[in-house]
Length: 530
Image (cartoon, rainbow, N blue to C red; front, side, top):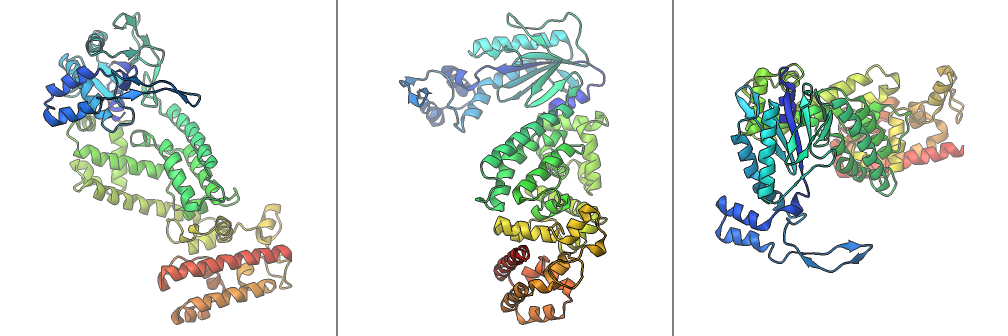
C-alpha cells in the first residue's frame, strides 16, 4: 500500500497505467508437480524437499453440508488451508512471474527506480507508464498463468485497469481473450483507489462503518456487560475493534480523524458504563487511552523504523520519495512529525540508530509525553474537572479498574464530579450555585463531592466506619499525615490520588481501595434511602 501510494502521488503529472489482477482460488489452484519442480529449481532438495512433499502425500478433504459430512476424496491440487507453510509455498510458486515482468522493462519510473509489479498474497498489480507497456505485462502474466495452471478472476471488481491521471480514449487491454474493464476506482487491499490515488476520505468512512460493526460484535461477546472485568473488556476492544480502526494507518494516518475519535470514546463509555454527562477527558484518563491520531503517529514512526532496516523495494521507493516527494506525500508529514517529537537527526540520517524494539519504546515515550500534556491542557479550562485534574496525575489505566464494574462506575462519577448531587442537578436546570444545598443535613452547604464524601453529617455513620478501616490498614506515618490533612485533601486521598498505593505497598492499597469502594457504595445507598 505504501509503495502504491508513493508511486501515484509522485507521478508528476505523468499517467500511470495499473492493471489490478486477482488470482482466482489462489491456494486451491496450485499445481503440485509444478510446485515440486520450482522448489527443485530454487535449490530445495534432499530431505527438505521430501518433507514438504510428504505433507501432501495423503491429503484428503470432505465437504460438510448442514452438519452432515460427504464422502472423503483425495486432493490432487492446492495448498493446505491454515498451514503456516502455505503462504511461503504460494509465494515461491508465483515468484517467477514477477521476475519475467521485471525483465520486460515496461514499469513506472520513480527517479532512477523502475517498478513494474507489486504482489501481496493473491493480489497482483502491473504498473506501466504507457498503454502498450501495460498490455505487454498483461500478456506475460497471462502466458505464465497458462503455463503453471492457474487463472485470474475476471469478474467485476476482480481484475480491472485503472489509469491514474485520466483514462485515454478508446483504449482496450486484454488478458488473453478477455477485455479488462477500465474502472474509475478500484478497491486495493481494502482501500479505494481512483484516478488521483487512494481515496482516503471514503476509505476512512468505510473504516468507521466496519469499526462500528466490529464494536457491536464485541458488545455481543460481553463488552459492556457485568460478567467480564473491565480489563477483559479492554482486551476485547484491543483485539476485535482497534485493528479494524487502525488498518492501513501507517500510510494514511496523517490528518486528525474526528469520526474515529468519537467511535473510540463511545467504546470507552460502553466499557465503563458511563453516560455522556461524564467528560471525554475522564473517559480517556481512566482507561489511559491515547487519541486515535496518537496511535496512528506511533504506527507510522514504527513503520519508518522498519523501512530504514529494509534493503528491498519499500526502502528504495522511500529513498526516492524523499527526493521527489510532494507536500502531500508520506515523507512530508513523517518529516514534520519526527521534527515535532525531537527525532530530526534520525530523519536526516534515515537511521533510527537502534533495534526495532528500542525504537518503538523511544517513540512510545515521546508520544506518551505529548498526549499527557495535551490531555492535561484540555482539562485546564473546565471548572467541573478541577478536582479530577488534581487527583489524576498521569495518563495511564487506573489500578481500581480491576474491581467490580458498578463500584468503579460509582468512583469515576465522584472523581469526575458527575454524580447526581444537588450541585450537578442544579447546574442542568439553571439554579444558582448557592441554592444547590444538601437535602440530607441542615448545614445549608452546597451538596458537591467535597460535602458528600467529606463532611455531610447525615452520612457520618458510614464515613466513620470507612475512617476506621483506613486507619487500621495504613502505617503510623500515613496515619499521621491523614490527621494533619484538611478535609479537602482527605477527600482527594479517598478518591484515589495516585501516589497512595506506592507509599505503603500495592497489595495493602488494593485491599484498602476495595473497602473504600464498598463504603462509597454504602454512602450512595444511605443517601437514596434518606
